[in-house]
Length: 109
Image 1 (tube, rainbow, N blue to C red):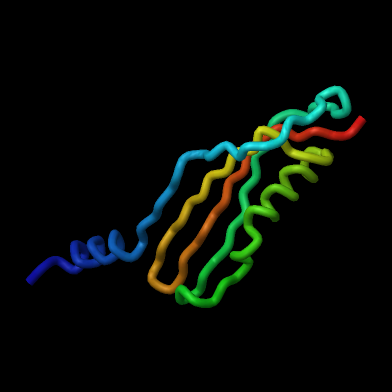
Image 2: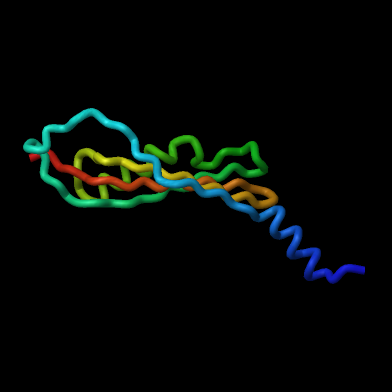
């Protein structure tokens, strides 16, 4: 008979796995830098959950929430040089989706 700890470890590895990607730079239109003040780099994360794989909890607007929070945390108006990374975690009853955004926040002069 197998050790219960080994069996639990195998099931944990199967049911608690994760996936992560690299940052992806979002293309954008040129911005007239003389009209904006550079407030610096920022990073923000937003999370959503799919309960039982079917019930979304704050899952549909993760990117918008992350971008809005990143801009407001720096007191800016827009974000440029935007990069996005997505991470997923799977567990037996839920899927956790995280969006990380990184970019430069600007405020209109």
